[in-house]
Image 1 (tube, one colour):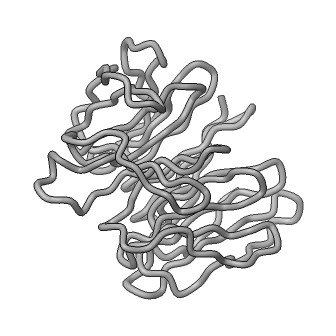
Image 2 (cartoon, rainbow, N blue to C red):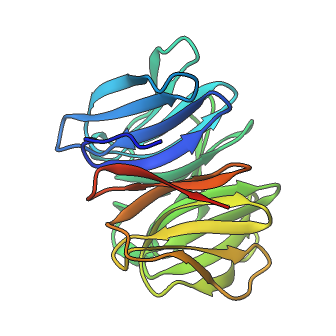
Length: 239
């Protein structure tokens, strides 16, 4: 399936029934959206956003960072939109679980001192990692936390802030990733390729090249999906 004519598609995720994505937009016309896998219908869940960045599903809710409004949002199962946190300085990548959200904050200065921030479901906040390059993606896998940095590194930490380990160097900025089948799958924006690396570290495998600004990525049992930000498309690669 391909959804054409999107305004800067950015992040993507999926459930059994829907594929969700954010449209980065142009200032105040960004949006959160979903595609029904049953009938290919498209719903706009939250219009009028200022550069929504990352999205994540948990317990029936869709969570999102709205980078230019300094907010973290949740679209609830009844499709109401709730503001979980305000006053964040360019919130960008996020991951979520029962305890709360893990958010990469990009607007701190200098850029090599941008925190990974924990926000619980009541809005309480704490810094998990500081003194690192700006995170472009954040993922959870059990007790492990993975993030990719502005300088192309894939790093592994933990929920409680254990020392970081560098797994691989993509050589360029990554903007999204997902975990499946023992691998971390990721997109490399400027270089225009899609790849993966084993969770324990090892060789980086290139899955697709010549992509037009690949952004969000998600994997299910049959295929790998990603969005082409400049091309305005949602793409599929069978396993």
